[in-house]
Amino acid sequence: MKKLVAYITTGYPEKSFTIDLALALGENGVDTLELGVPFSDPVADGPLIEKANHKALELGFKFADLLDVSKIVAPKVDTLWMGYFNSFYQQNFQKLIPLAREIGVNGLIIPDVPHEEAALYTELFETNNMANISFVAPTDSEERIKEIVANAQKFIYMVAYTGITGSGQSEDLQPFLASIKKYTQTPVYVGFGVNEKTAKEKVIGADGVIVGSAFVNILLQENLTLTQKIEQCSDLAKVIKEKINS
Image (cartoon, rainbow, N blue to C red; front, top):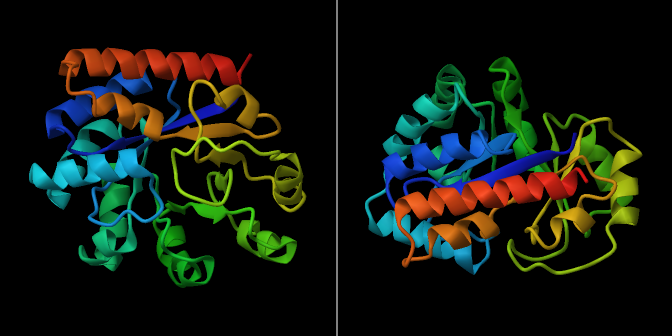
């Protein structure tokens, strides 16, 4: 069974909605949830997620909101925090990782920390049985891929192309996938540009997909009620989960 990872922006449009949405996604095909930490300059994210980040911050998102949401969601849905290093560093990283583990969070995705810098925190993550998700990009040499995936935990975030999330760019991923799987047994999930139209193609040869902008696009629809947003996100999750396993 191929896996579906869903990203949502924490606190947009409100904290209680994030909790309701997260739990609904967990009941409708989402295997792992990325709780996005709103940040003013999300450099790896496309315009939709960037817009949701800014809106959440304008509405007063605080890091404490992430903790509140996680305390309710993490015991019920496999939960990761996705954010930029400064957001975590400001919370005292050495104390934050044990706290995250205590709450039930299983790992972090930090796109602006290169592999070499992430290695500095290996012991911290391992001691707390937390995953620090590894990224592999098409621009990485085979030697670098081998190094990055050597100790990869939980899954490898395979960047489907060079760019930002949500662009939907098409390319042949098979040679890239083969070069990763040559060196690891860790599952490889494809991210960037994955939606209901592209998921079936992108998951070929991979173990799962990571979907963000397609869900956030629904959250940004101001003509929808909160209930309708949850219903549409749930339906989208079911469709994508079915497509990647058909």
